[in-house]
Length: 111
Image 1 (cartoon, rainbow, N blue to C red):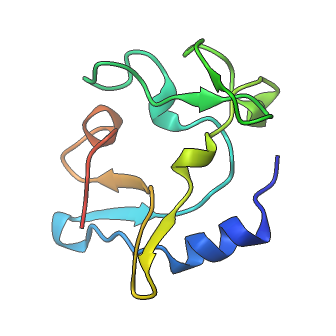
Image 2 (image 1 turned 60 degrees about the horizontal axis):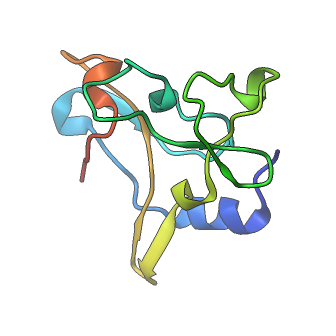
């Protein structure tokens, strides 16, 4: 699966998520692969992030291999960036913050 021009445009408009004050790095992207935080036991949450099939249906197998690695699990359409208005958007980010680990970064919010 590839991102559409609409998704790329929406992503480009997404609020830049910055971790400068936290001594870390963040990025925003939409590659349609299974979310990193979609694996069981990755973070202290009540369930991992959902994944979807290639036809955008949620799948219940949190252990399904990522479609980007030959599996059947992809990011769900409801995880695409979205605009609130012409000047403000939200998006999901990949981040690495000093003093933390992926388990502490999963499902966290940053401004």
